[in-house]
Length: 282
Image (cartoon, helix red, strand yellow):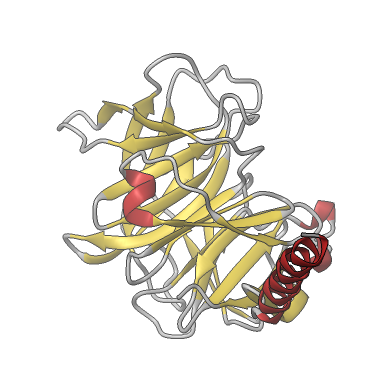
């Protein structure tokens, strides 16, 4: 009996060791391909989006100041500055590129509310300009209210199912909201989709193929199957630790081609930053 027990115990230990070896052999979810780079002219990069109109161009913006969109390449080199017309700035926090009747549009999220006192937040939509344009056409603005009370938010993403935002709160109150189609008045009420046990989400993005949504905090990057997330299902995200990047106030995220992920930050008062990682999500 003792010999048999030893054989069983030995088998369990061997299986555990093999399982550990298999786990250790798994490649990392993401790897850092380019560390922190300064974004010329962008004082506090709060959001980022990959251009659908001009290959190789990224767009960003500050969260206050002048209503400008900044174009740069994937190395952080400035490629243009475009004035966004027909808008005002309260607290711009994120940027998304998506489809619209004009083809490709940029959606600018004026959704920040640190003190949770705003009666309404605003999302602007404008046909995507070219980097060498001086100004955009006048933007269309949508005023949104929450179904309960004001919330702070910094994350917006666009999918084929519409626009969504995520509040920036603690794990008990962070929530995903759907932006409804607006009426002719441009006023609507956000629809809560799900509670998310996340702390202080600062940016969001959907992958070009629509399969994934990335949400980020200052220190973590989380990937959700898009269909499950926007359906309100309770799913565990795939998580990547951003702390080794040593970003100063990491803020925005966007999907590039072939698993590339772009990250921008406000730089902690030292100027906007860009970093690049590559992730294997399949």
